Image (cartoon, rainbow, N blue to C red):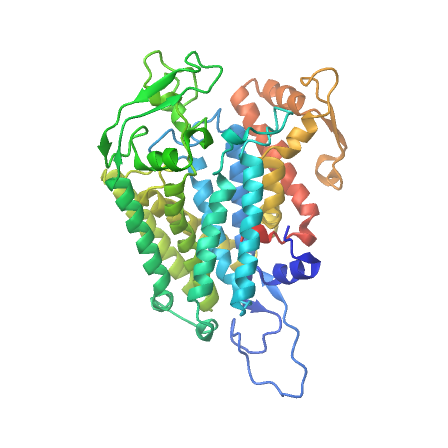
Length: 508
């Protein structure tokens, strides 16, 4: 994945997510003492090899698996898909989990690059890679997996998306880490709130971002606006509809400042045309499922909205900064107990704060707007989930039960592009007889005979319909099982085949 050549890739893979507490060359009798004891200056220095933080790979793999599950089964299971507006379903944890993981990996990946210029170049290169893949996969160019065509009208390119948001957060926080870190304290053990004091400037930046976000969300006046319906299947296609607002400080679907800024800066043609609010109770009687619009549904139900827009991406940076703090704890604290204590206290505190803001009706949980309560709840949940993985995998050494997730996490970009973005399934659907409904794909499952015991000829739609749906006599259950086994488990095993070379610096 990393474009810096094989030699650079190997070096980056070795230190990308290393636990500074685990080096085979450590000569001291103390757990995780980086400095060790004095060594005879004539003796050759011990070879120091590093182990990746396995729990972080497992957590990343879980997040990728959740994304595949959400994309594949979210339409049939509303509790899995995104909340139509306020609220937080399983899908709404995926993006902040990614941002948290990216943030946590930053101190680990930059710890062994003392040259700031080299570090900045590395960060910029990875940012450009993420932007490229993001625009290519979510900008409208790729129509996989169902539509075998490709290409996009530049007047309708979607500039924002999942990878673009990750790229922005990574760029801002990684540069902040490079500028603010002090080499003199990188290997000093810390405890309590000393890590907060050590990186106080980063928290000042986080507070500034929060103040700017809240000021804009609650301070900008949102006027009435109109748009042209672009959905050819909609009976209102081509009509210009008007949305009445004339207010400020509202967090409702049509009249929030987040959407207003995106319409003004990006342009409504460059926004996402199938937002989750289409399943809102004001738009369809089938809510929370997607269904036909009500005859008296408000105009905004037909309008585009960008869930990874500009202002919401600004607040999303806070999720990455919180992840960076968890990485700092891993770098500076040497005791497993101290690490877990700091992580769990912060995770529980954030979770309680976010839920309090939501249920007191002060600030609702809202992924589309990336509200402060949403940041707290999802970052707190990410911290708690990581604590559990760290305890199970890195302390109890329960690696085998989580091996498929670890393999997926070490090849996250590959699995995302192939599975979550539908590229591989689109490739399979591209081989057909007479019509695209008769797809026939031969998948030779190398080395998977230990689990499947035979080579299979898979027909994507046929397998989903006849093997999963008809056997269980339920479309919802069939699709869920199809996603779990034919997509998530399959790609976990493929990632296992690539395990020796999995280092996936793109997601750091």
